[in-house]
Image 1: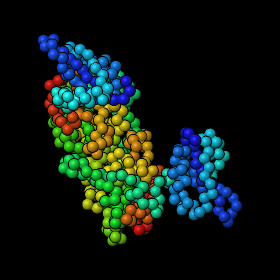
Image 2: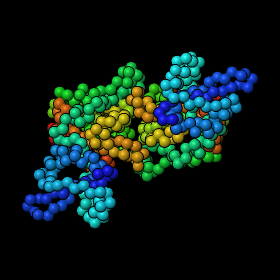
Image 3: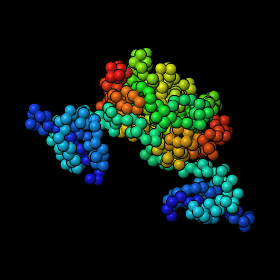
Image 4: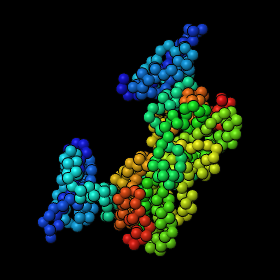
Length: 252
Length: 252
């Protein structure tokens, strides 16, 4: 079980005897137990999950070549898996992880480069949080942050204590970006400079091809007292279909 | 030879029989061959280098405790060592390394996320380049970039083709910062998003304590046709003594 293989979730709809692969993803085999435990899977497949096959990489490649349906499924679902799901405790999922509140360098020095534990952010609060690939990038700047900024009054009307934007950036870059977007009053910006938060949630992504390095996918969540009540993860970070402010407003 | 030890360069001045430690630095032993090969050492010590001692960490600690002279030497020189020096070929020192010209995300997409080989930047040109710990940080914003921006006419008058600022940041953040500094016309900004450039030059630095992660120290160089003619590296990144625009103007 060493190396990287293909984990396929084979599902059978009871009304149809035909087994079909509903979900597949390249995954490191040591994550298989974690995958099996994941409550989200059973929810996603509405009880039709029958078995999980681990295919070694070579065999997986042969299967992939034969199955165009599977190929398209990979495209659709490869980033839909996270280590957290609706019902998860976000604070417990990222133990000993802190975020860094966006601030100027001088504020960083005077704060002695302090960080904020996740419990301070989420415990006893209703929070909407969204994550994105990077400050000063395209969809993030033009659509993602604005979709929350313009709806801030509606979030407050629904009892949300804070709307948070987080990205794998340092807190000074996040501050510079927030100022440029004129969004600091509406939204709290946090850096995840070492990516530990997103790694813990299995939402990290290698975006070196876009000259960004290791960042995160695009996502949003409604979190009440640390518990995830709604979670939306874009299939690819360039998409902006499920993680915007309007979608999560309807989920609160 | 595993672990981290102290490498001491023991030098004897021919006019004086007393051997003295001129340079010492914590260094991973596997770098010893590289250190020995380094042309810079022989140049720096003007031919008085006699031997290089590797001291295991425990012994090194005892030596350090005994020798206040060595302690002060470490303070003075711990970051003065880089894998390049005056006379080095900067392009050859970082083979297969490219930088990423600062640009907006849309320009990044339309350029197909292209990068710039070092040879395109340095070959056949007179270049002043300076590196710093991070966009949107303190000394970098308030002093380092401005010291080059305000002297740009003097650099041009001395025949410099380009003044370049480089940092371990993505090119979109560098662009956002350059726009905020209103310095894009005077200075060319480049990202070193994966830190490969600074790693190659042994100028990288872990600044996680300042919530920045792996970045670079603060430095400047005058480079003619790829060859380093002057190199200035601050002892600590918070200092701004040798890497400013005024200092390197006098070195051209």
